[in-house]
Length: 461
Image (cartoon, rainbow, N blue to C red):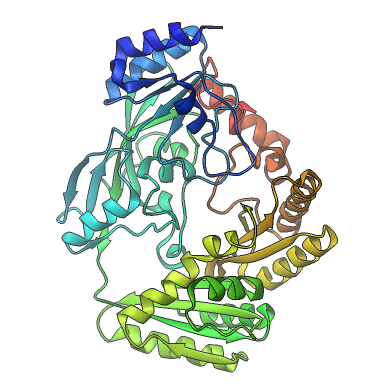
């Protein structure tokens, strides 16, 4: 094994002394990402400033069989950026230029360290919209979003990150810099490596630039709130909204436990006697939004809503959206550790899945609250517990294993938007089957013959 000092000298020769850290504080800070209960120390942290520096680091790492874990903002929730086998954490936040925003071509070229919110603001200045909207948009980076194929609150109407990636500049483990896709909506020359790299969690290549699609910014937007006696009623309303031919920009839900936690935290005047809250919103051309919101309101009333209100102004609409975004910090006030997970089932089985989650939580004597994206069946069961209680942590792991299996049994999946990482790797074969997992390994071998890129994740399992 290469010593920390020798590794530091080699990396400094590539990126300069100021862009390499091997001190204990830096290593501890990069031993984990936003995923609780996963931690592993690297040997070094490196901050490359160009694709060429990334390539040189990877060539060195391949030659000396040193693991490399690419990292953006560190906000992911599946332990995808945890250096399980030590080695180098490659932080890409220095690559933070917005190279181009083109109103004429409806696209942007950005480096991986640009945050989602910053790209969104740059697009908005030109009357454009970058549609992917992960909950951590203020800190999550475009490179990380692409690596995990992040979703978000607008996923039902607009899709997720993969729907907007037109092309990539990426560096292979052996140092070649490749460009996949480009500036075109239509391009079927060769295998679709752009789509393959999107969601590959840094196991196949390191992304150094992305070309992403933009949309014209909607002229208007609006938001409403519906309360239901039970999540089953809310789920029926969601199904009825889609069946009526309405595809809202936002269709989110909170269960009773989340409603109480959010109201205690944010004091927004939410009803605490409801079994479920449905937050809906739409955007589009002037005049069309109000009509769609009224139609959604009517569908909710027809399906047993206790109360439906429409936000009277932008400030109230933003407050309602904040209620959904603050679900995690609100729940975090209930205990020192929150474990936020991510499963997806068909829309019509949403209530059934929440019932299964509640049954599993009760049986394991755990507090698990659930919120998520009702429109696409994506749930975020969140367990609140004391990290000092080792028995509770073990019960938490057992409970989530059962939750993942329950989602699969309901024709769903173990992750809709967070990714697999280290957290869900033990459950991947149950979702994909042994043959498909073996295929992932062969793809990994073709891209990364030495197995240095993010080992212990996806195809390197």
